[in-house]
Structures are given as structure tokens and as C-alpha cells.
Image 1 (spheres, rainbow, N blue to C red):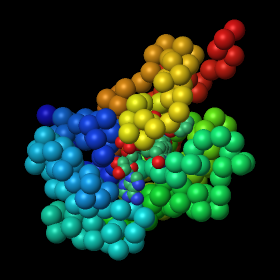
Image 2 (image 1 turned 60 degrees about the vertical axis):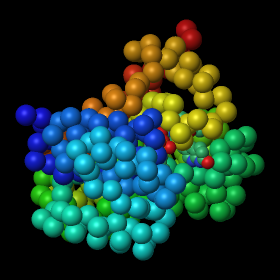
Image 3 (image 1 turned 90 degrees about the horizontal axis):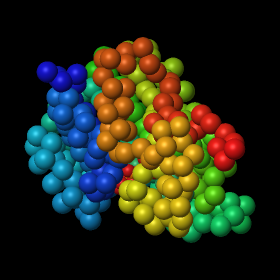
Length: 260
Ligand code: NAD
Ligand code: 0WE
């Protein structure tokens, strides 16, 4: 029997079979979890429906985390499907206007870019968690996805850096609140992976090569490795872990002077 048998998971952030959320769904399904999957808009609906068919006929629903009405409607859809609650919430969402993710941070970040990046990439974790909190069962857990740009200045990542820093801080504040409900919350800080969100980024290929050459594991990480860590963190095997940022990056963030 899988280590997530009897658990129910809502997974937000599938846009393609390359999405980190898709790999997380695969790992959780393999370990015996029952799934519900959301899609951001009509354009992504059929892709998420295909994933749902693959992962044990999962429930699907629309969810735009930028809208309070959409958050409430999605929470209602989950409640109607799982009337006695669920156990796992996965938030794998990030967005900033494309123009802000190039050139100098100081030149290319406007007030509205800053606001959108923080709204969709950071605030949405708290808004989504609050929307489903009454449904989360004791022993359950929340997981989000972060990146090293929260901790370091990285070319082109720009406003997403401060947004991820805010996301990671939110994990620590939410951990205090959720602990009282016997719930946990953690983040995975993943190394670079070629997904849709990474596809448009100029120089991403060179970044992958640099990271592989500089990492203790001497390679890039896969979405499957992130998926397996996600399944562990959301399982009872990780019952003592909350408020934590776990790096799944081949050790890249633990070393310096890698050219020496
Ligand atoms: P992806 O493009 O496959 O997933 C991003 C998801 O965000 C998409 O499913 C998209 O629909 C969703 N999204 C954007 N705006 C939304 C909104 N308003 N409402 C609902 N959903 C919305 O890319 P990914 O790389 O799998 O990204 C998932 C998470 O992983 C993000 O938080 C990203 O920052 C993080 N991450 C990615 C990498 C990487 O290199 N790919 C590394 C570390 C962390
Ligand atoms: O968090 C991310 C993806 C962030 C992202 C990407 C896009 C591209 C398309 C947020 N918003 C958008 N908006 C778009 O219109 N990653 C960790 C992947 C990523 O993105 C980078 C990276 C890495 C790594 C951007 C610049 C530099 C490195």
C-alpha cells in the first residue's frame, strides 16, 4: 500500500505534462492518494481533464487564484465532492508579466508588475489556504513551490525574487496558524526545470547547463524528484516538519566558488 493511501489531495498548477504540479500529481497518485485538479482557465481545461483521467478519474474544476469569487467557487466544488473533507493542498502557481522578467530589475519593474507578481505568486497561497481551511482534516498538509531567487539576486528573475521571498515568509507565518489545527505547511525550493513557465525565459538553457556543472550532484533535478519529495512532505512520514523550505536542487544552493 502507498504511503498516501486514504489521503485526498487538491492540486493547483497543472498547465501541461511538464508542469511540476503534474509530476506531483503522478507521485501522489502512485502512493495511493485520491486527487482533485484545478485549471486556471478554459484554455487549459482539456489538458487538466486528460491528467485527471490518467490519475484515477480525479475531480476537475476551474480556479483563477487572482479572483476571490473563483477561490470561493472552487472551494465549494471541492466541498460538494468531498463532503467530509480532504488532507493535502498543493499550490504550484507563479506569475509575473513577461516584460518584468528581463533586463535590469531596477529598470523593468513597475508598480503594477510588482503588485501582480506578489498577488498571484505569494498572496494566493494564503488566500487559497484560507478558502479551503474548514475542509482540511487533522494531520493534513499544505505545500507550495519556491525558487532560489527568494534568497539570492539572480539575472532576469527580477520581481519574482521578492515575490518568492514573500511566499517563503508566508509559509512560516501560516505554519504558526495551521499548527493549532494540527495541519502543516512547507515549501520545496526546486532547481530549474524546463516547464512552460521556464520556456519563455531567455538564456534558460545556459542556466540549466551552469547549474548542472556547479551542483554537487553534477546534474539538473527532474520534476519527478520534486514530485516524490512533495509526496513525502505531505505524508505522515513528514509529521514533524512544518514551516520549512526544502531545497530539491541537487545541492546547488549549498556550495560557492564552484569554478575553483
Ligand atoms: P507551469 O507553467 O507548468 O505552472 C505554472 C502554473 O501556474 C500553471 O499551471 C498556470 O496555469 C498557473 N497559474 C498562473 N497564474 C494563475 C492564476 N491566476 N490562477 C491559477 N493558476 C495560475 O510551470 P512550473 O515550473 O511547473 O511552475 C509551478 C511552480 O513551480 C511555480 O510556483 C514556479 O515558480 C515554481 N518553480 C518552478 C521552477 C522551474 O524551474 N520550472 C523552479 C522552482 C520553482
Ligand atoms: O518561478 C519560475 C517561473 C516564473 C515565471 C515565468 C514566467 C514566464 C512567462 C513567472 N511568470 C512568468 N510570466 C510569463 O509570462 N521559475 C523558477 C522558473 C524560472 O523563471 C525564470 C528563471 C527560472 C529558473 C526567469 C528568469 C530567470 C530564471
